[in-house]
Image (cartoon, rainbow over all chains, first blue to last red; front, side):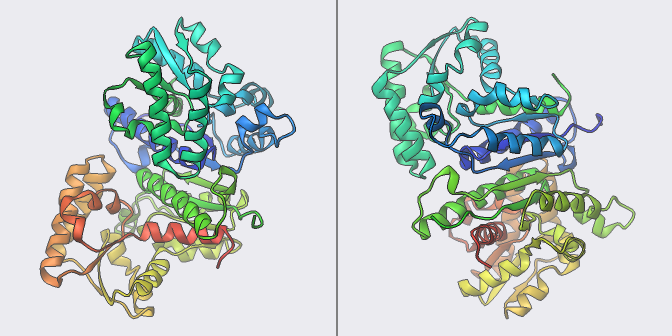
Length: 245
Length: 245
């Protein structure tokens, strides 16, 4: 057996269903790591991990309205608590929340706060997609979260138009967050079909953690190339727990 | 809107996949609570909840071999940490771990530690099943975890025979915990079919948190009456968070 894996944290609740999906992906990534490294898959072989699901103010709203409740203090409180519990690395399963990544990392330098866009861009490069389409919240588009990470890896990125962005927000808020998965699937599929009509069989990056809760279940999506940043972030967190940079 | 819900905790990792399933059930129970109470389903309407997935020594082994590593200290550490984070109630998604329920509750009296068997027995009575079959680990059978709770509710309980108990342990350990879901489904189904052959259409209580990860997926199980103590415990924890005793 390897030395004990290290404790890691998940700062979540944005929304809660996406947090659940992320910890599922993380446990799956740990199991995959154990198999790849020829270690027995036992309860005790998994890293200690803590998930905080906190009622954090809406991220897109905070970005588009400076008078709205801001999420930084609540996220900072959770990050400090996870660090106090011994987490050496923390992942945030919410793309839009990464607008505060630098502020959080600066205020809590003793923990490694993973960055979903950097991890995703590196993985897309490994997968060999030269061009992708980004499906995200208005908050993520506004902050250009993925721009720098994609540019650093030489990945070209296309964005949906204004109408399709409204469909995405409807699918995320009136769909997944409100528990209406049929609406979510329908809206996300509409956007994907429009992008594919223009750009052909382009890889679709589901860059809001609510999107993979509905889009992959659509029958039309069976033959599409979907990239899930949550799954990539989960694998990155598992690698940190088992001692890989 | 109601006053803010209270913080609750989940002491898990026994095994990690069961912890993931439990937090999924908990988030679902919160969503159901919000709908039943006519409240909007928003990220911020969910209670703050913390899940600790800790590498806790095997519970059944500890019960059957006093020389084996014991789980009490690791569970106690987690329970104290969850309490320090503000949890007013904590659930443990592992039936066998409840052998240490009294010891934990006595040492940490300031938190309400839910009891999976008490919650399950009360719900079975509400459902109106006069007689059930208990599917569990050898550790849970040895400690008679459900005996008192069922007796208190006037529920008759039948147990599988020695051979079927070996199949259950194989399904739990070589199946779910080791990631072989086909083996798990096959073993659990065998046990259920044997019980149904003897006792007819009896309600099957899946009293190990690994069993609901495989048995309900079996095609044969479609028409069986399955009771999931994890789901009952998750609903009880949601009720505590929203302020119901």
